[in-house]
Image (cartoon, rainbow, N blue to C red; front, side, top):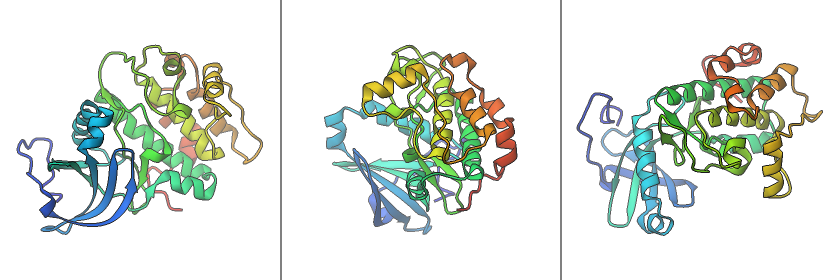
Length: 284
C-alpha cells in the first residue's frame, strides 16, 4: 500500500477496486456513509475504507464538497494529518482509502476521562498547531476542527481526519460552515473570514481539553451565538487549570481576528514549551 500510494512527484495513480481489499469490522458511521477496517490483499497493509452512498450525495448535494475534500486531503502530507491514499467507485458507492487510526476519535477519549491533563492537552494543541501551519502555508483553511474530527493512531499521535468543510483559497471566504460551539465570531456574524478561524478553534479546543466542555456552550443555539459574539469567556474553578493555559486560551479567543495569537506564537507560548511533548506522542 505504502509504495503504491500516490507520491508528490508521481502522476499515475493506482486503479483500485473492492476486490483489492478484505473488508472487516465497521469502525464508525457518518451522515453520508460508513467506515470499515480493511486490508489490502497483496501487501496486507491495514487501512480504513470510507464508504459513501451516491444516493446520499444526490440527496444532500455534496458532490462539489466531496470532490474538494478529496483533492485537498490527497495533497496533504503531514504526520498529524490523516492520509487519503486514493479512491474508487462502483455503481452505488464511492470508497475512500484512508490511513487507519488505531485508537479512534479523540472525542471518545475526552468523554471517557472528562478532561485531559495539561501535558496531554498541550501536546495535542502543539500537534494541531503544526498541522494547521502546514495547511495555512498551502492556503488550506480547515474550518471544522473539533474532537470528533481528530483521531489518534496506535502511538497516541493526533491526526486531523475530516476535511469536509476545508477550502483552498488565498482570498477571504463567506460560507458559514463548521460546528456551532467552534465557530469564530466573524462566521457567526456572517462576515468574511480567513485562516484565523482555525486559530480561534484552537482556543476553543484548548479550553474543551482542559475543562471537558466548550467555553460558549449554552441552553439554546441563539444563546451560544450571543456568547460567542460577546466572547463571554469564564474559567470555572474546577478542574484546576494553570494561569499559563488560561493565558493561551485568552489570547486565542479574541474577537478581532487580526489580534489572535499567531500559530508561530502558540508554539513559543510558555505553557506549550513547559507541557507539550515535541514528539507529539501522548500516552494515556
